[in-house]
Length: 198
Image 1 (cartoon, rainbow, N blue to C red):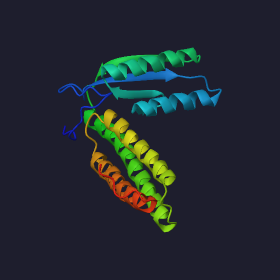
Image 2 (cartoon, helix red, strand yellow):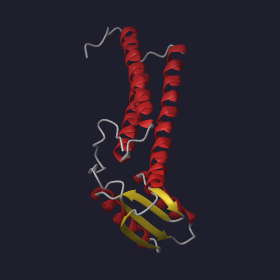
Image 3 (cartoon, rainbow, N blue to C red):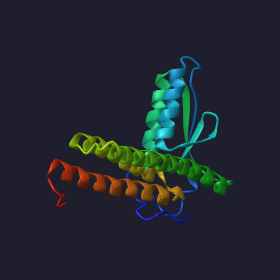
Image 4 (cartoon, rainbow, N blue to C red):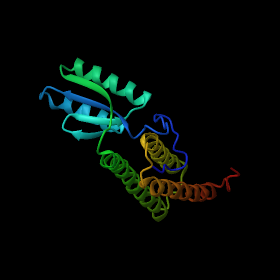
């Protein structure tokens, strides 16, 4: 499996060899009411980057950090009155399908970043159209860019197998960085500070 450069990230242990063969499987049951409990568990599982292989059965590549996170989630499910079992298992058949499912989930996340970057660029364009060249607007856009970059890093951290969408998401965030730098230069000029030396 080909991984993107810089694949070693916080949160994912990229051990060569068995990363695609060993999986953690969380099988759980949650009381049907209140529904917010189900939704909360679903959000946490998605936030970890796990994929559902069946209803109430979520899988992650077996890494120490994934094990800690799923053990914690298992304890939480039990505290909510549910039941949960965590398996560390070897994949005997269907590896290609499981990897495709995992990469597809990452690609969906990368696509969402690309969409959000397009929205960011539209916002910068609106600033130009409205001639809003203030430090307040610059700071607001800088915060939005920091969120995009952080989100990209989180997804990259759980992209254990080098999903295809990484490159387009990285390029989209880079385009946002360049657009914000150009906007900052204009803000500095409008505010009388001149160009930044950074």
